Length: 439
Image (cartoon, rainbow, N blue to C red; front, side, top):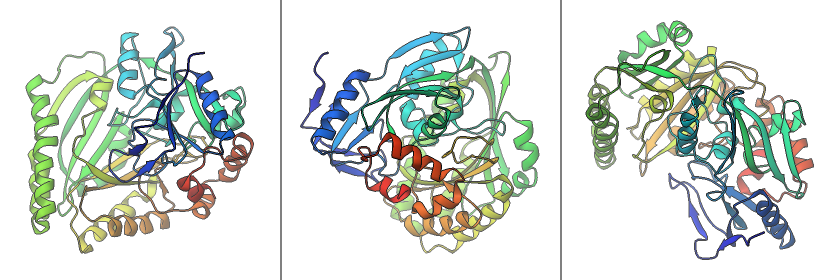
């Protein structure tokens, strides 16, 4: 076996949002499962903890470590494709962006995606990443089989039919059970989406919410604080890609207005907070209605270059009106201003133990703040509201909860911790974040 690449110069790490950083004792870039096994064994022998990192798009300190940082960029290849069975096996460090390209080349696609594709597939699954769709669960519900290197050095493969308890724990694992090295995903035939986007009043959206969620394959909306305005997005499957977005319109909306102009507006709001309500109103009107078609992954995913901090809570779907009304009151009463829109999405129930959608249809409220602007009071006050309604925080986004809350919020939380005791008895993969949320 070739030697594992070890980097002793790039030991400092920070995430995309700048909300987490750490300095590792050493950094390792394994290119195979066997090299991961060797890395874990060496760390255990040296008394060091291990954390795998992907793109760093989590807003938490889930990947922070002072021990051994395992960078997955070299473990990102395609293992196998079975187009007839619609099964694809990839290494864990493959980015969603590259995965989408690989799948499209074989006439396949994931059934759903979030709106960002820079994450590694293993990182996205570990934190319960999701898109929107009333009949679809989070991305982890598309996993058929997983290969994981445990804290004892064992290479374990699990699926719903083989080690099902381990599978239901590992599908959303927060990096607590080991290092995932391979994933088999159940895909669908490549499909085209018709996107319909445009402004609407928040009151009309909430009044027609059941119909909007039920009659669209994928529905979401963005609320602009200090206004009654929302940007509504409906994506539905169609047989033909007959109305593609022009290159200029795509650049104008998704690059120039949504990134460059919006970034400038956020910087202005940070410098002059009193202007934020006016900025929010202008932002709500800046994007004109549009209808277009395209390959599913190109419609789902958009570039996000404006840096922000985010908290997201999954709520029982019936609790959304109360939660949203409470959020509006919070925003209006804050001593600081909120320049970023609020995103609302929907998922179906699933049975994965630490999925935010475990056992219930969910509505997600994601709140954001531009980097450098006050956010803690905003986030903490919303968190108090969300938890009073049974909310579950997204594992990869800012929250202030501890293990005692999760034990009450997740019926299988104790079972997850029991699986952790078996797979990582010496807590090789622990860090301060996991100590806080798992106990």
